[in-house]
Image 1: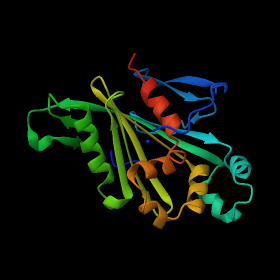
Image 2 (image 1 turned 90 degrees about the horizontal axis):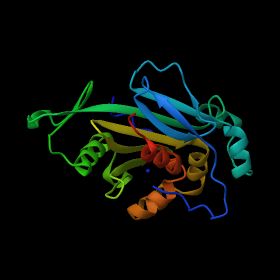
Image 3 (image 1 turned 90 degrees about the vertical axis):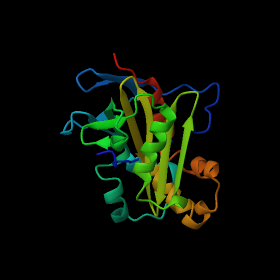
Image 4 (image 1 turned 120 degrees about the vertical axis):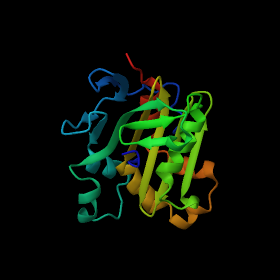
Length: 228
């Protein structure tokens, strides 16, 4: 379950005179979790997992045309990536943290995470990213933990795909959010080669990935979240 990482922190700062986009407060999991997303994100009601929710932002074709009018993609190339005319996909998961003194249980089970009673937020982030990014080569991975917000992010760029996850401990749970801006990912894949990406520092890699990682939206959702 926790290997679902989709798709980490800030984009360029908005000018002081810019008007922030309207936001909407969402309540999920029977009112257990509240957080904000920009208006336009639509909750997919067909989810079967009671602790997982997926949101879709429509308008992919129009947004790609506006941001990258001379893009080289054929219509057939876009059908799968922007399926249903998606611009972005956003995932939210809320996972219980169960304290245990048994070191052999330290990490994950089907219904939550087992953690030492005195575990730090940074240690949870580190172990989470180790597990999520394990399938990917180390040179393709990046991860950061912010001691101020006590939030972390981890990502891996694999060929033309991107796996991204943001995490934050929220009382006795781990909140996991991640989102890929599919339009920005298409632009990234045409404008930044894999070879050039691998030569970058971690900070440079993250700066290059942040728009495709939908980092501004993910960070806002993560830091606005609360358990009422």
